[in-house]
Length: 255
Image (cartoon, rainbow, N blue to C red):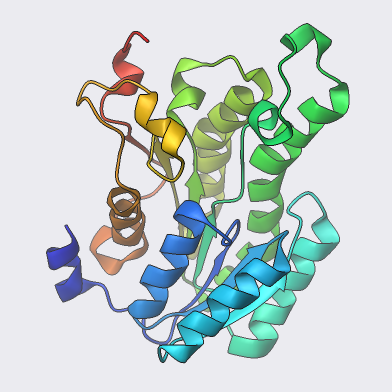
C-alpha cells in the first residue's frame, strides 16, 4: 500500500491534529502525514515527549507543533483546536489516537466488581469522551471549510469484548455509535468520519502473544497505511465505516 500511496497521498497545505501523539500509532501517523506535506499538531498529556518529536519533524523540514492536552478536559481540547487554527489557519484532519486499557495503564489486577470507579471513569473518559470532545471542538472549523476527515481509533476488543470492560465498552461505542453518528452529521457538510480498529499491534512487546488467524501481530506501519489511505482523496467516497485490521482476531480466535 505504501508504494501506491506515494503516488496519491499529498497532504500539502493541510493541517492535522493527532491525539495521543507521544507514541505508537498516534506518533507514527503524525510522522507519516508530516512527511507527506501536512502541518501536524501533536497532542499528548506528556508535553516533553511531543516537544522532542516536534523537534525531529521540524528538523527534517516538516511543520509541526506540540501541545499538552488531556483529552478528558474539554477546555484543553477546545484550546488545542483554537491554537491550531491560530497557527495554521485550518483543521483538515483529526486522528483520535489517545486511549488505553485502564487496568493495564494503572496496573490493576482486581476483578471488575472490585475496581475503584475512578479507574473505570478514566477508561470511559479517555477512550470515548476524548474522541467525542475533539470532534465537537473541530467540526465547526471543518464545516466552515466545507471539508474535513476524522479518523477514530477503535479496537478488536470493541468487537469481541474483553476482560477490561470499560475499555471494550468505550471502543465499541466509538466504532459504531460515535463514528456513524458523526458521519451522519458531517457528511452533508463535507466532513468524512471513519474508524480504524486494530487487533494486536507491535507497539508493545506483549502484543506478540495475542493470537490472530494470521499467526502474528500487525506491524505499526500496516495500521498507519490504512489511516493514511482513509485520510486521502483516494477515500473521498468513504464515510461512516469501521475498518477491522486485526489479522482475523475478531472472527473468534481462541487464546
